[in-house]
Length: 330
Image (cartoon, rainbow, N blue to C red; front, side, top):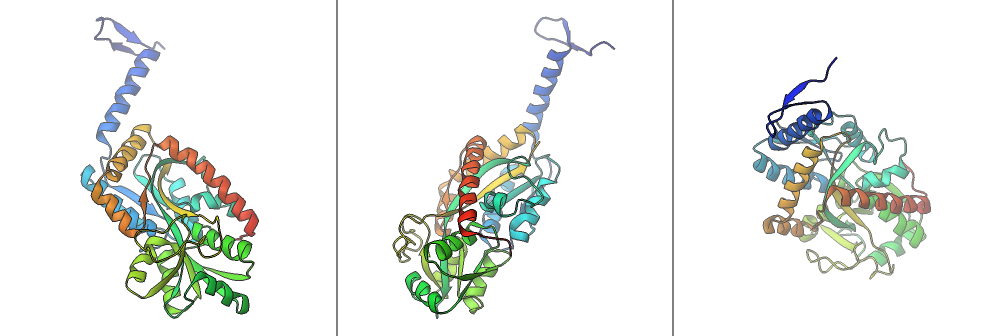
């Protein structure tokens, strides 16, 4: 069968074969870039409502929806240390209309839960690293006044602490801090998101919680929760009175939770570029940056390629922490 014929406007002649296919592909990609999104987009958050990823997803979704002229629907699929929601997106159609917003737990789970049902590097395209925040050790107002005091009490009385779930960076940060550095025997209680973990600390259900900072900020400012230490290398402007873990007797300690956007592998490059470009525009807006800062986040940004490289370094880093702490899925 002969190749299909196409008209070439440059020389008035007919063309066919590979050149025609290349032109058709270029036109198709250009049309897709111009037309995406043509229907509502689903943002899947693999944590409970009210947590840091949920907050970011709703703010970003609202702003992108206004820019796109389309609805952005946030769907919470919590459970299994984020693996339920992440696996859902991995199996979704790679058309740009199902988007994952998750934390650095996706890097942790490569080692912690290798049978998660997805491959973090092969099944996803990293689109944008949106924001980063330190983790924080918190307790009820009636609890210890400092991290040093918490550690001292935990040596005399067993400590149970909560986190947003197994495999989250707050979980691993606390495991490394308590088990490796402080030499404590502790019990980890995983919750389905940061908000439930904070509520458990508020009620005294657990002696402390390790969570990403933004979830705890409103409770600390409201006098209901006490911040014992942040895991950044310097104090945070939103809570300048809260010391770092390093200042609290554990020099060199530094960990962060980041929130990133991913799409299933095979998603058209034009859609990936569109999402990344529009998130970059959003991160450049002073109003949005101020909103992140008030929550304890710092904007990150960058290209999909730089995010993919960063993901590789995070996978290697957290693999080492998992091995050293002996962390396991409860």
